[in-house]
Amino acid sequence: MKSQYHIIHRDVKPSNILLNRKGEVKLCDFGICGYLQDSVAQTQDAGCRPYMAPERLIAFSKGYDIRSDVWSLGISMVEVANFAFPYPGFTSVPLFAQLDLVVHGDAPMVNNPLYSTRTKNFIHYCLTKDLNDRPTFVDLANTPFYQYYNSMEDLSELVGAYVAEVLGKIESV
Image: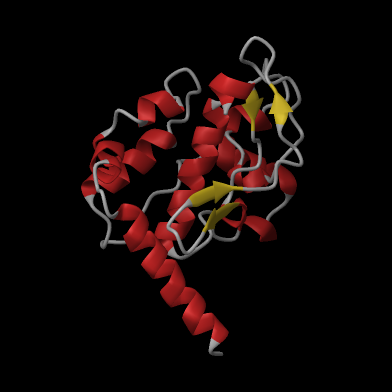
């Protein structure tokens, strides 16, 4: 989206990532997306704090770019992989403690042993703290994780079958 439309989503989180029975992945809720000016977003206050990149939470930051959405993707992947919110106790601490945790604390990690090193490395790469070192989506497309899954001809079928199975279980309840 960034290269074609100069848009940053600013609210990437699990509830805004949809999967359908065809195995397609869709990003939804563009209500707070923003336009990039010279590839930089200027407003700080849009989005869900736990998924925001550190640079978006720093008051004196000079803006941010599409790499903040990369961070949010990484946080979302940690949550999905661990079957748990990535910051335990986050909502029970004061706001400034929350901000300090995201900005100065270690990035959450995947602790589920079912995931490959390739997957964990991809997520860790997304969660690079320093914006200048964090990958772009183009950089992510060159990772072993992306290359592996992008080369699977039946990936959409596998994801679609999984979604259909989950939805079937929900519908039968």
